[in-house]
Length: 311
Length: 311
Image 1 (cartoon, rainbow over the protein chains, first blue to last red):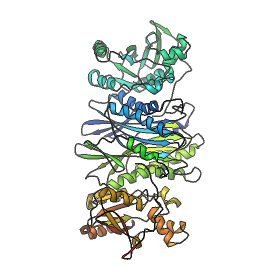
Image 2: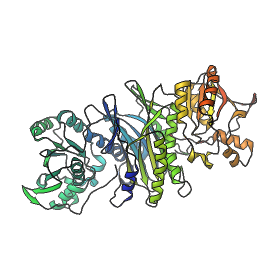
Image 3: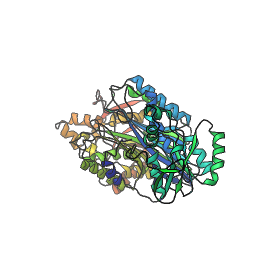
Image 4: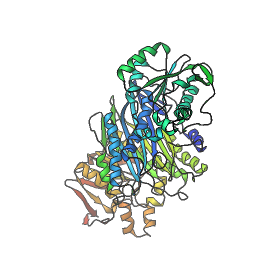
């Protein structure tokens, strides 16, 4: 994951990647889809680099292993895919202790076991920075949920709380796999995305690809305790963090208004400990309308663009 | 790919990787297998790191892109799998020019197009060394060929010529995809492997996993011109290079003696420009018996162990 915007090369490269769009293969959103005899298989790849995504000596190795697989699981969760298998390549510096490597694997394996995933292969190399690249493979029983497809009138929901992820959450988050599966099988959201670049930016992805706009209710954004902490208790700064920090790995989805009641009742029963909040709705047109207690306000996050990375 | 032997950590890690062997998923040799409704899907992952696998300013960027995908294709070739798709993650240093990156992709794309492969996704990150990690996906119409399965009496064949790869070949080699497909569909070798660690070491893998030994005819080893060049014209040194240098990415396979004639005739017709050489045969027992014109000799490569890398 590249903290970019800085880096125009990314766009150039993105255009270099051949995207043959014939069935049965498709590139969609963060992931590739392959249809094999009626079943939808989903592929995604993410890379974690020391000094970019974590610092040696600061992050616990178990957390780094957990995050390496977790960011991939979050991609699957957003499509409502069931995790199946992964492949891992590691670039390893000699200065990393055996204990570190062992603990990295403990963190990764714990998460892999939780979803009964199979390791289908890998490769090791020496490298100057710890580099973990994971390709993940999942299966959708139903049609995979996309970023596109949000329709005017849909209610926007977000799971968990947002902002301040850098403090702890980005290393310890629980990818919303069960929630993604539940939503795709029971609720059929029109569109879904995981929040890695920050709410505003990821909502922007969803809106652009859905050719729609949205009203965002700022008074309903679930601001995390860590966002408040990092903002020194300043509510306006904390809200900006919740809107733009990124690496929340929560789910953002759009659902028809008629399903609202069923969703909220079902969710409460199924995931009583995972917050779910309606934060706005989809509009005709383009862009985001910022609302605070029914009043139009200015974009409180103007100028802060959050993370950008290549998919 | 790690120049190891130096690196005991590798073994430790290998044991950490969970290998759940229930159907429909299997880890075999370099690759993972997945059976979906009768079809065999094959996965492999390989990583290329600047300063380990190539040097910036020395290797042409097109060659690095070619090699990044080529080493993965070679894994598929050895199983007789048809390339289908890949995912790529890149760690990119800022000091790499846009032209370099563009040309890297040109090399990679040329090879991908040749096999009509689809890119199913990827990720980019900043990094200190250029790091390209590719997961490749292939399909076997027939049962995938394994390293194990060689039987006493089988003839050992090798494609191309061996040794001195570092001079040029390791960056420009043509993965033996068509040959692997031909062999698996028409000849059904008992065992097959691609030579990445060096003939002696990769033959060793095949023999150990087949619980068999072999007689190796040193006078029949196809020694490359580059091996001679790098050996200063010394035939003994050139032979040692052919036996141990590695990164040849040629196919080594064991085939029943009754198919020998059919293979040689068919190969000549189909691949007139790709050398094929019978270099020995499989024996009961263990280890390699070294032969030179029907006489037993000592291991000429003793002490040189070639490349080792984690799979």
